[in-house]
Image (cartoon, rainbow, N blue to C red; front, top):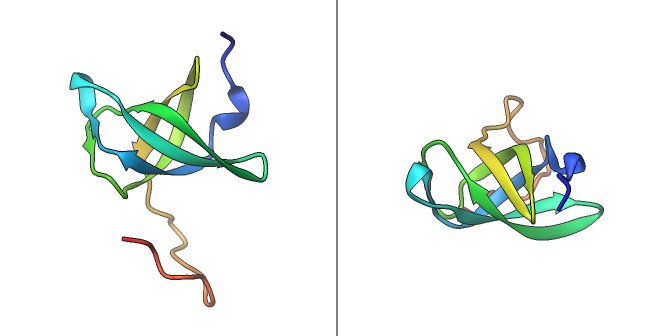
Length: 83
């Protein structure tokens, strides 16, 4: 299956913890006006609830992610983080 380049740069939340090189987890990514789940690989283990940035699409609904902290922080009026 072809890579989904529109995913690169999208923000998501880990729904099943990743194990780094030992195995993938799952992320819920905001895309196309909704949210979709993808199998997620990360360079280091990431816990459930971590915010991530999609850095690559492997195709077949699989992505590479990196932990993400918004450099601007939350804006006034934003709902609190689900953590």
